[in-house]
Length: 523
Image 1 (tube, one colour):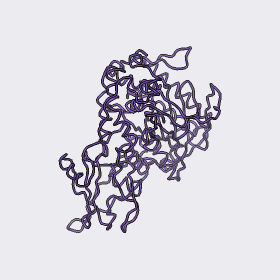
Image 2 (spheres, helix red, strand yellow):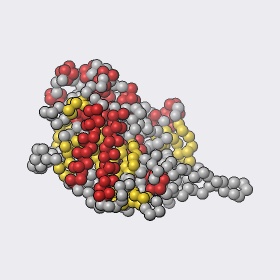
Image 3 (cartoon, one colour):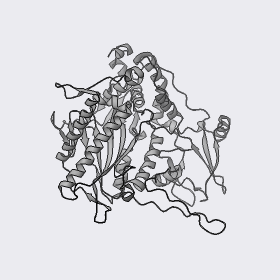
Image 4 (cartoon, one colour):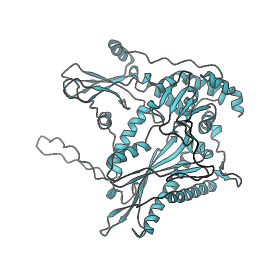
């Protein structure tokens, strides 16, 4: 029972004041319209032209579930005030983890609250982002064992840098340990398939003090040469491990590794085709049209340092310029939310008059690109590739923040005070067992997340200030239709558009730029 993303709010007319929850009407958003109008076309294009095979079940379930997320005619919870006629309808969510802005927004808010309250200590934080070459992206996107291996090697390299650097400064005798939380992001800002590691590291190390308890020592300074050293070490370790496992073969005349076939294209031909296209932006996940301001490009070909604390080498890139102070609560929350962000935000999508969809970039690319224009089918192809496969972990902990670390219980924040328990009939308070120090994160109700993230109290009546109670969960289609008909709301979801004929693209301009599906398959 969750309508998770930032809901529409209105000022309260009653005594309590503050914003009030309102239904967000997901069927009116740009993303919902794009998926609804092109989903059948994507199915037909994949099965008939691009891959001659259906999409895997987990991708279809993600796409179908998104169309039902937040739609009242699929069921809702009824919140009522016993003291006045106030009623709230809360639509059910799809609870998917691929691209749904609502459900991933809820997951972002909950995980951020848990990390800040129960995991990340009061130390400076630094973001480290590792991006891998194009040749490795399709393989890493669907090989969870290999992706976990690459993540462990990268995190171990950065943890080793902190230990050696502060050891060289004689802060500790080489026994210091840092910690990290790593999130796997699957796409770039333009929704191209780009599995990369977004990590938040404690910007320093814990070392045993005089009493044996861990004491934190912050890194005094990080230079671009330090980031370059970390990238070179991580790249060498990752490629060395992949070569030993037979995953890649290095060509002496090329800077990019040659990835060996693992049979994924034979097992999931449709998904493999979409993933390869989503990495490069080729059809059916492209072509694309970029919007650039008329400014000259900066830098020169072959330059390894692209920005302060940002370096590239042989297709790998490493960014470490984002930092949050130990007592800067706003910066710490913004940093954690950023690494947990959904792949797409509703406000960054625009429908253009020429049947194109525009993705407005949050930050311009290095070549000056500020927006990407795509055919709706190309956007949907990139969304399908953004869905993670089943049983692939998205968050990992390392160093002193790992579950098995002996220091974790001593460095994580102290547990928050629990609410007072109700006394028993004899007048004595029951004794509640306190949770272990490494097991404090919990499920946070939707109402708590709304109150914490948007200052909306969904449990208080906006008219009289009384408590809102859950009156019923309306799931029966007949009951849902009767209640919505009484309110004048639609009783059926918006219809889906039929599949278009080849060449499937909706935009006439893009139809002229691309070939027919058989030629795409030959490519």
